[in-house]
Length: 418
Image (cartoon, rainbow, N blue to C red; front, side, top):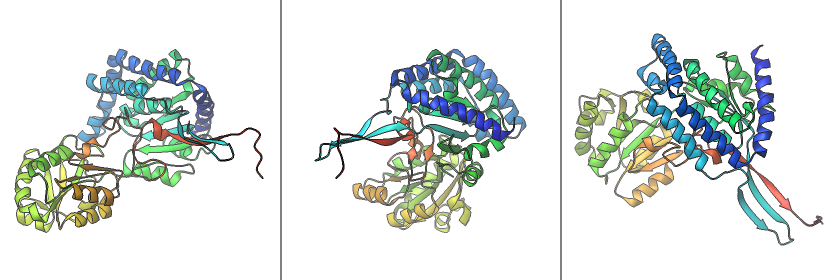
């Protein structure tokens, strides 16, 4: 079967399943999500055995330590995946929620209600936990999903898929409600992106090259984020000890993820006092600093930054550093070079925080908190389907609510328009 025929087959099955899901009760969908969590816990050894094959193949293929970290499944990671599913199941069912409802002067009742999008395709690399997060959130929101993980996680995803199928069967929901693509043929991604009438939305999660390839091929809507070039700005009225700990956490807690900080901006008024201490702490954590000329006058050991450093997503222990002339200069830098993902200010000034959050054009803006909190689980969404840097249809970490659209329900009593 060629890629086009394969996508048509799974797309038609997913489309039929989406109708059954939309008609299923929230209780039935939650039962499937909880059953999936139980299957993960029960199958932990099996999942880790499958994952070990992917890790071994990844090492042989020369995957970076950051990529291997994203790929690895441990007892702890599997427990977190199960807990995320249980958190999703506990949330309020978004399907059928009335967003707004009111009566018109002529007696018509007008309501705006949440409904599923239909069929969602998710294309992703490496991280097997995306498989369960995506499945859980799509089930919660009444959507069928087609999941295509990277070839580097094929064994892990196949084992997770078996857990999901058993969970769906136990809840008496169709197997095609969650379809895992079983081929690594890249043409399948292109065909999914063009599957008008079968797939309602495609979401690529991974490197910029993957996302751009999907966007260029797509004839259906795409939600995306290209890069995570996140900033921490230390304002002149910052608590400098707090600022040091925030940038350390934002850069080093997990450097290979999209919400890790990539650039440190420091107000010129406190740069001479802050940078030596911060640079020492970052260097002790193994971070390579690439600074502007003014930064290097204060900390000469920094490497010289070049223009490309300001827009770089390193996903490694490298940090660009720039001294800026106040808040507006910091905002201008972020809006020019940032990726509209997550940016933070450290300040004791309420007015500075308010101005920063108002002017920075990013999906998430942090005040006195690490950029690493930009995450669906940390926002109380249970998990996330992805982090959108688009402005339509959703922005930032996307939970179940963000996987719905709405329809208008208008109820009359034989009303006729004059």
